[in-house]
Length: 338
Image (cartoon, rainbow, N blue to C red; front, side, top):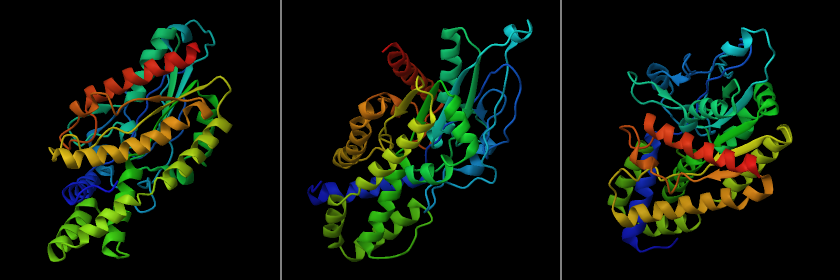
């Protein structure tokens, strides 16, 4: 991780730019009868989309504890089974559960634009191919990291019930772990206990400090060389232990790896390369435990997601969500045939 000075400083600044956006997932569902389990902040409308106004209210702002807080933790569930229900038949629905951050939630940075999450799209697609109605629950939250998943989401009774009844579980997580570690690194470099409210604030403080003392670059090199991958791995394993203990034996798990969220920021190639090296190491952790837990890791890193993002350059636009849906569907079909 020890690069020359010109490589190291840009990468830290680049990753800090991630603070203006985070990652989520959303949900839509069809079952035999209507049911309600409450509404989550930024819940989807009847088409499985997160409305722009709701998205704007959440904004993908990370907190020091991990997940952005929601006043109401429950997810919205819609139900429908037109053809079979009219005949009075009882039909088992294909149940999809989504866990994750703003990417999984279907975050929209434009209040005039609704984004349907990849989980909703995938549920519709898979149920159509299977010839079954489907139910869909999305518990994704803006700003969620792996610690927030383990501390705030997985202990919830409604989440555990959804996992226990799921035929497939989609999980997208890791981008906010990257962001939170970057903020910790800045604190370490500046030797401060200050908790930055945003990445923009952290970036501004760091830039000013380096201008006053260029030798801080040496501390930046040391900090990046001691990047904390262990905490992410421990939280990831804890999450998978919980999910696997709750799910049905034949239920499948498809996780997505981390794509480069700064690819569209037109950064110098050396800066982008160091960012990608860090992401590759985090993705390596995800890949290394796939066989152990029996999940499939959908590869977003080498996909074209970065070519289908919103104006923030970070979050997938509608085409990006469709692309992710196609990728996770293929991984699910491969798993289910094994």
